[in-house]
Length: 133
Image (cartoon, rainbow, N blue to C red; front, side, top):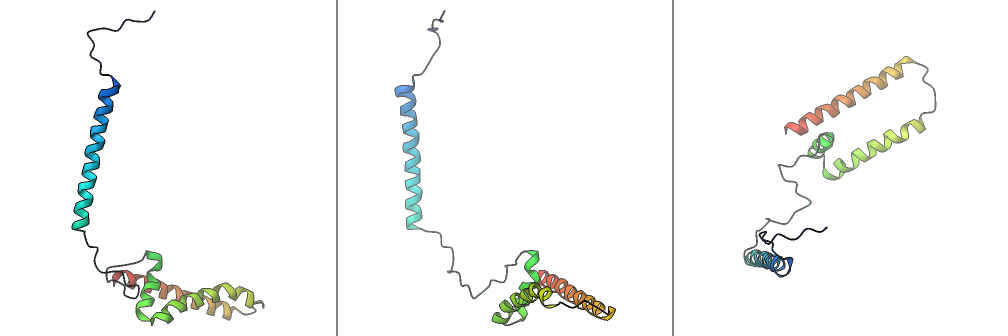
């Protein structure tokens, strides 16, 4: 059996009470948005001068894995600083295909190890200098 509604309970019907309340909230929200828009229209917040791609601000720093290249860009001219890493990566990628002969002496292995160690030390020093300066 269905229960009879208790006449003592206070209920509010959805229509028109809740619908009118939601309409008032939406109206005030819209008025607030319009006020903020008009204030922004007549007193805009400036972001500063437009960005210049040829001038890097002093406070910017790249992620740690680009710090060595960033420091290299500070020391070399712009075109050379941008082209040199690309050429070095291409040399590293192509080198295994150009070196066909087997190593017959330990001297060349030692020379390669020394050159690699020097390049790693240079990269580490450039990374540290890029972070510090």
